[in-house]
Image (cartoon, rainbow, N blue to C red; front, side, top):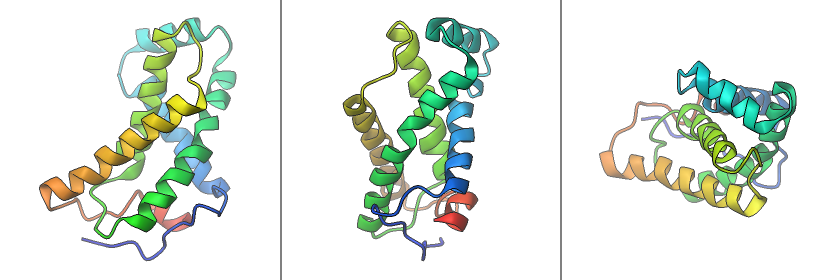
Length: 147
């Protein structure tokens, strides 16, 4: 396994290139990952605004994800168990879609977002402890390059 030598600090702002990559994976989780065209239409109908506005609103969770992830990366003394973008960022996008559908198109408040991010990070790092092996990646390639 490979251990990251480039650990982001929570005080460093989310780098723009990484924000773009994470935004793409958030979009993937929100609309594409379910492979349901119906779900995408339902989310947009529930949201009541355009796709650009939804993606913009969804991406407001990325700085909170960055802060929590940076703190976890600093605290973990182990290899990372998988690809962060697929297993955390896209999953968070799926959760946002579910939340919108279940709450009349309203985005979650920051406390709910923080709890969900924490839960996603817990699952991500717990997998690495449970299976004792990862896929050899620290986090997604883009995270490693810009972090």
